[in-house]
Image (cartoon, rainbow, N blue to C red; front, side):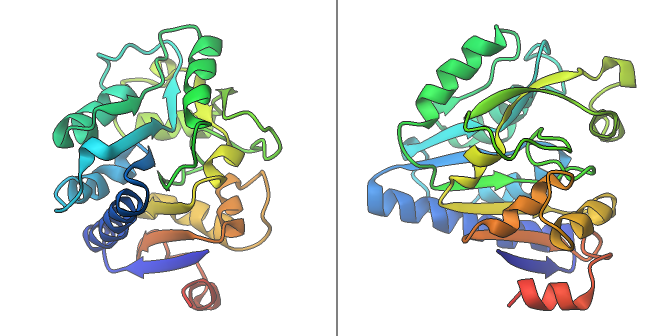
Amino acid sequence: MRLTVFPDKNKLAEAAAAQASDAIRRAIRERNAARIIAATGASQFEFLENLTKRDGIDWERVEMFHLDEYIGLPISHPASFRKYLLDRLINKVGISRYHLLDGERVPSQVIADVSAEIRKAPIDVAFVGIGENGHLAFNDPPADFETDDSYIVVELDEACRRQQLGEGWFKSLEEVPRRAISMTVKQILKAREIICIVPDARKADAVAKCFEGEVTPMAPASILRAHKNATAYLDKSSAALLNSETVATLGA
């Protein structure tokens, strides 16, 4: 795994989008198609804004998969991750092949349908973030590092739900759903390349726990350190609690 630190979230987003667009173009050039996983949340705003402006990507050849979604939340709700991806990525660039997790359908059927599609071929590049509690997708601690399923139903812990409230997606904690469908840790790690976008001071504690110390289900995103082609993009605020040796070692 490689770690890079930028002065601010905008510089971070530009660099991450440059790497992401290179990965997509390379996959299209080599395999005539690119399969990607897209993350959501406030941490991805600037990254997706930059990515959708990159030149030379034949988005008609891109197939997109969805990391996670709340169970029971309508697509019309501002916090719907389906709505987020349609507004900020799919409709902006014209992706026609995409697999969204419909949290209003029976979860087991959604999981069966999307799992069948994602297993058809390797994922070229996955875009992910890290939650304030260290989660990867909606795999809150202690995350399941062992399941071979592609997607699972998860119970969201209070720290995760409070993050969603704090980001302004909901008016009260009670409104935040307690269950979600999430891509599993093992499925994320199957991607040929992983680009992890983590700006902002509120992520500093999670970043330190995930990139220093043990690789553990209690710091779910720590597992990214086991991937041979993962890059974490941090800004000075999110990297503030990392010691200089960590930055030097992982940044080499």
